[in-house]
Amino acid sequence: MPQFESQFFSSLMFWEVVSFGILLWVLWKFAFPPILETLETRERKIRESLEQADRHRADAECKMQEYEAKLSAASKEAEALLAQAKERAQRLLEENEQRLQVEAERIKGNAQREIEHERRKAIEDIRNQTTDMALLAAEKVLGRSLNDADHRRMADEALQAVAENYKRSR
Amino acid sequence: MENPLHPFELHQLVHLSLFGLDISLNKAVLIMWVVVGLAATLLVLGGTSRRLVPTKLQSLAEMLVEFIRGIILDTMGQDGLKFFPLVGTLFVFILFSNLLGLIPGSYTVTSQIVVTGVFALMVYGLSLVLGFLLHGIKFLGILVPPGTPGWLLPLMMPIELISQLARPISLAVRLFANMTAGHVILGVLFGLAITGGVLIGWLPFAFTIAMNALEVGIAFIQAYIFTVLTCVYLGDAMHLHGHEEHAH
Image (cartoon, rainbow over all chains, first blue to last red; front, side, top):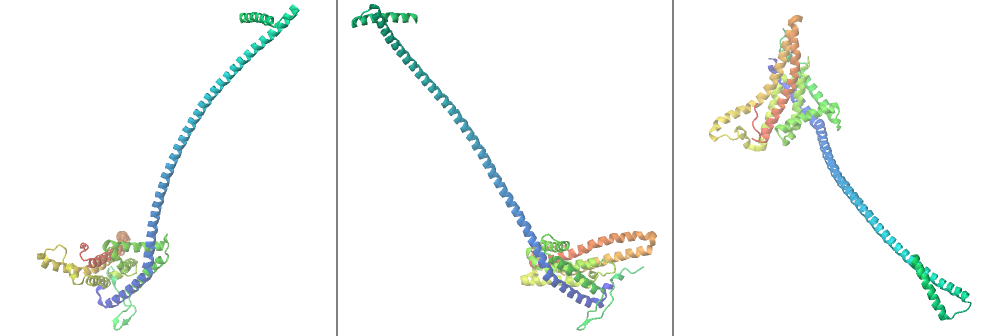
């Protein structure tokens, strides 16, 4: 086999060691460090990005829960407010009604009292005027003045008659 | 028919000598230079563009580095990474030699037993030096597999010694034989294709195409095996009995 021709051994070994040494030095110095560094940087970047993404997602979930809690609290509050407002409106309505009724009663009572008062006054007026008119008429008829006692007696009699008449007519 | 071993023949191109040592240039030496130039260019250029989103060349270089790093981490663990430059250069050198040898008219450097032998001795020698430096005389315990009963020692130690000595030899011969055999088969098939003429010759020619594809795979696999075994031997020396014995 040509590979066992020993005349080439020394040059092959020498140049192999030299070439390998040069390649080793070049790669060690200029190739491997930057490549390894780039790989590590990328690895770190990816890991960091993933961690960041995880963190962001956790944050987002947390926020979402917070918002949901807030939302449900707000809706509960709104419901409570609505119920309160309804209740208040109902109460106001009832109060108003009651007050109006009371007011109406009061006005009605007042009116009745006034009517009664007016009626009494009217009756009194009528009585006084009738008495005066009767006295005037009697004076004209008799042509003379009666004394005061006569006056009173006759007036009373007349009044009696008027009152009786009035009662009968009612 | 052409001699299938013809592609492995070397001829002196330029005569050189250093202190009486014959260091004449020949085709294999020139191809070694091409290997070094190509590997250095690819990896240095790939390393200089340190982009987060890699360019194509950068991707290739990073893939290589990542691959080698994976091998080291799998076999030696985290503290094996200090051998990264050596193991990486070894892998790159062998891989490029194997692949360049597949180009017709080129020369397969790793089909020279003396070249693979130097690599094997270098790796094995380093593992021995490392073992004795780290563990002192206790490194001889590598001859005693853990759990061996005392009365088996006289039997086990010679066997382990042979297995240890077989390491560099198997390392050297495996790569040399694989590279040589592949090219011999290709040479034979090509010879058949030429002598067979158009009528029959297409059959061996078709085989050469398939064989060439297979050879590309073998070029990768042999470089990988050499690197993995390097890592295993260095790892054995580093963590004495820390790992299981690996089959050869």
